[in-house]
Length: 434
Image (tube, rainbow, N blue to C red; front, side, top):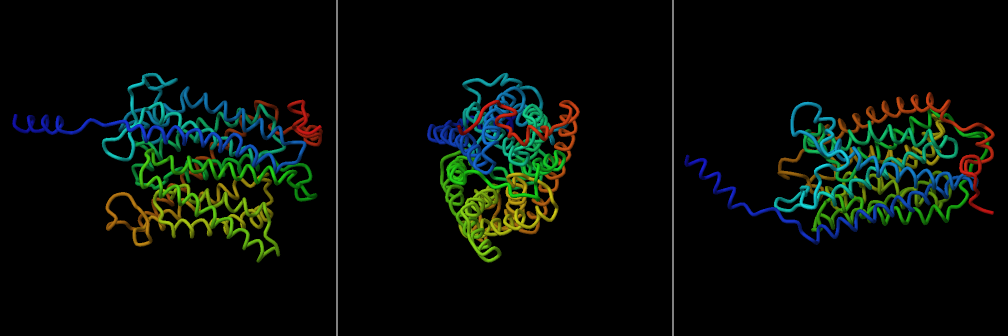
């Protein structure tokens, strides 16, 4: 009886969790910023890189892909990613349908943050996570640009979202998730977003086959100014992406924000220097590509790395992704049109594994739990496990999804005549420039 009375007294003495208006405001801004990161940021970045006859197809694929995934997220994606039992069953891999179409989500329901006693309205958390699902899925567009049937692409994204993005988000970011339970570090989506989408883009590009004239004739970008603008919007949006992933407005949010400045800056400089050494010149496209590589690499480490670690991680990603784009892709002869795997897949791997190093308190990092007990080697093995699971899971789902859409649509690739005319005209019946 005494123990019961004591437990009741303890419960009564604990302050009720509060919803801080500053946190709510920051998360709403972050949500809107990530939408800008996708529309128009990603769309313009990709649009400038394709030929003039295909720009509207890319813009449409990103725009309508975002729209479709947003609806699928509230229909069942959020429920399968974050709802469900706390133990047993399939909870290590996927949630359940208890919040189908946000059933049970009210104005009063809340979601936990990373600080005891502080919560967010659940609708705010749902909206923020929606933007992650949307941009991850539409990143894949760059791998198959200029040659995939529009209907086949939309079907592929829906299947891949359901069976790859949602389970990976659950495994990494939900309490019962497999990798969450193992202690994997992924602050804002190295495995869930970048490795996941990068591997899917690679598999889809290989199954689809190359564009006409690939490796036989030049296929230059048609508007690098547009790509530059898109890169700037991506960088701006990434502040919501990374710093918003802290779910609060505090000092650690500032850590993630400043790392999101430093890592892409180092990536841009490293790529430019690498181009100068290996190719004799530093290009504008290389600079923005290096910045994106740095952004990708810092994503899983944004709230764990110190400023020195962020700079080093961004620079390494710039060099490694340059190698993947300039050397690895021609060597293996796959046509990843806009280098989604070379930057997001490879950069995501660099970032996920590098997180184990830069999170070390001896290197200025901010690990979870007891800093004195942190082990780089032990954390590296956990990170490696997460990377392998993400690669295999996304690769298998993407392969099956491509086989399904090829069967459903009588092939996923447009005809040679349609590809030659350009997808703007052959698929959408319009031209970007008249």
